[in-house]
Image (tube, rainbow, N blue to C red; front, side, top):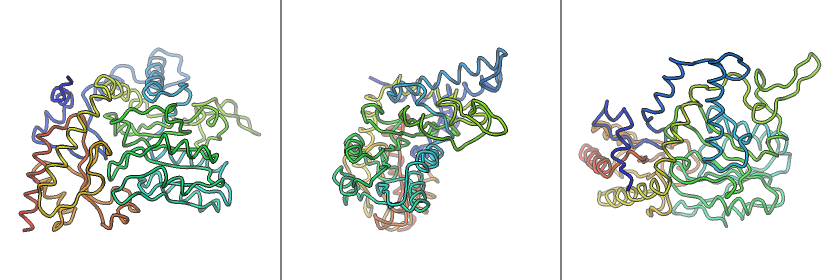
Length: 404
C-alpha cells in the first residue's frame, strides 16, 4: 500500500512551512526535491544550450532534454516521440493549434464546438478563430449538476463541424468528461478533436491512442514539474501537414534570401531556445507519477474527495457545486459559504494557513451558468491527507464565525 505521508516528505515546502495546507493544486502543484535538484544540477554542473552544440556539455544537455520527449511519449501512450512538442504550457499549446492547424483548416461557414466547462485557454482561442474566419462557435451545455454527456456534444455536431475542443477534467467542478466517446462522435462527422488534459494529467491515466484524439495538451507545473514547460501532442500526419508560426532558430531546414524550409516534426514547432532546465526537470515529475501509479493516485484521491464532500456537507449555509460523487470528479471541489463572499472566505482560511483558490477560475461562462460571481475551490494532490481536509473545515468554520 502506498505511503502518501512518506511521499509528502519529498516536497520541501512542507518541511519549510509545516503548518501549510495546500489545496490550490488545480492552479499549480508543489515541487518534489527531485525536480528542484534536476534544475540545480543542470545549472551548476553541465548547463549549455541544446541542439547543434558539438562540445560535451551541449551534447549532455541535449541528450537529457530529448530523453524527456520519450518519457512523455510513454506517459500518454503516443505512437511516436516526434508527436511530442515542447511548449511553455497548455495555453501556448492550444494557441499553437489555433494559429497553425486552425488558420489553414477553418473557413467561413465551418463550425467549432466546445463545452461550457472549458478553461478560457480552451475557449477564447476557438472563439477568436471563429470570429477571424467567419465560422460558427457552438457550445455543448452541461447538465444541471455540471456533468457533460456525449449526447450534449452530439447535439452540436453537424457535417460542418471541423473541430471539437474538450476538457478531460473541469478545473472548476472536477467533472470527468467522456472524451473517448466524444472523440468517436466527432470523428463520425469528420471533425478533429483537441483534448485539454491540464487538470487530468496528474490524476488519471491518459492514453492518446485509446482516446484517439487528434491533439492533446497539458502543463508541467500542474503535475509536480516546473513552470514554463508544456506539451502539445498531435497525430504525426497532422503535425507534418501543419505550418509553424513561431519562426527563428532551430525550426528551419534551409534559409535563403528567397525562401525558407522547415525542420521536421517536432523541431519545426520549437523555434528559439527552449526551456531547457524546465524540460529536463519534468523527467523526475513523470517518474514520480509512474512510481506511485495512477491506480493508487486515483484511489487516494477518491478517498479524499469522498471525505471532503462528507465533511463540507456538515457545515451550515454552504453550497457545493457539481456532482457530489467521487466517481464522477477528479481533484477538485467547488463551493461557497452562503453568507460569505468567496474572496473573504479565501482570505480568512488563509489566516489558518489553508490555501484555496477563489474567483471564476478562468471559466467565466461556467460560473455565469452556475449563477455565481465565483466559487471557493479546494483542489487535491498526492501529498494531501484527511488531516488537511479537517484543517480546511476548521478554517471555514472560522470564516463563518467572523461573518456571523
